[in-house]
Amino acid sequence: MKHSSIKVYMRWIVGAALALAVVFLEQGSAQAYPQWQFSSGSVRCNQCHFSPAGGGLLRGYGRDAIGEELSMKEGNGGFLHGAVDLPAWLSLGGDIRGAFLAHNAQDPNGTKLAVFPMQFDLQVRAALPYGLSIQATGGIRGRIRNDSNEIPTQNYQPITASWLVSREHFLMWQPAAVGPYVRVGRFFAPYGLRMAEHILYIRRDLGFNQLMESYGISGGAVYDDWELHLTAFAPDVLRHIGSDEAGLATLFERRVLSQQGSIGLQFKYGNGPGIDRTMAGIVTKLNLPSLKTQLMAEANLVHQELPTVGGSNQFVGAAGFTVFPTRGLILTLLGERNHQDIQVKGTAWNAGTFLLGWFPYPHFEVAAMGRLQFPSGQDTTQTLLLQVHYFL
Image 1 (cartoon, one colour):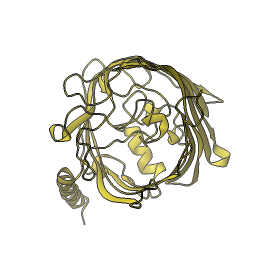
Image 2: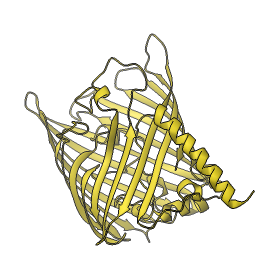
Image 3: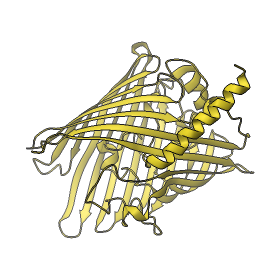
């Protein structure tokens, strides 16, 4: 079969898949894979991603890495497997994800099971003159299953009024991947390990849960040896989707040990309805290439002020390691802790989380998460999540 004919068939196949996805899938969240920083040979997250702190749409470098190095079998990591040649100023992408969930919270009715479409995102970036660019991620949102919670916690209007969402869109000035930048729009303030799994304590309980992005202006600089991000953020006052906090955040990261590791200092202050929250923390990574292992950890102290009950101090952290046994396979084990008030006994939640990522061929991923949560004085909660992920 001629190469041109293969491209035609690929366009038809992908077009049909997109049409079905638009009908059946809902918007989700896809962050970066911080496990690949250092272990893949890149020292900056924005070597693979357009966003200064990583995550979201891939650059050509990231697509080449997926096609040639990070997948079990080599292939074309380009948009639509290289079937479409995009102009240099335009980048496109997308994520399609389905999932199976088994969740046992010691409910008398037994373990809850669900098979559901988890994500449909489309991504676009257009380069403009003078180092400017505009980038957006949009998706279809719906409920996984029938739920009496018609108005979810991250949205102050019914789901039926917000089925189409854009969790990230921004205008950015960044003349080069290395150097200064400024961006304005909707996005997460750079902070923490930025793991893909939004239910981890370091995301869920620090204001980085699903659809909790806020509007803001961010500036800083990214270099091979260090990076700095400063962000001022505020709630979405039009559709009221996302965080309800306004405040400031900063992250400074320094590469160490011949660029095989990093250590970062971070700070965030947020003022929301009825609560002031100040957090400071440290985040670190260390790559051990001889052992095919990478260590990672994040620790945060959080001070909360509530008008009716006064102040309290919280600890939220995670630590663990990732093993790369063979090309295209990553195994991560994390220990987590959320001590909601470190001055009060019996207010801590601990968790152990196992993550598997298998990349058999470029654009395809099979992911699994097993999680045990140990609330103080309560029964263990067990969660198993299996995902099939395809990106354009």
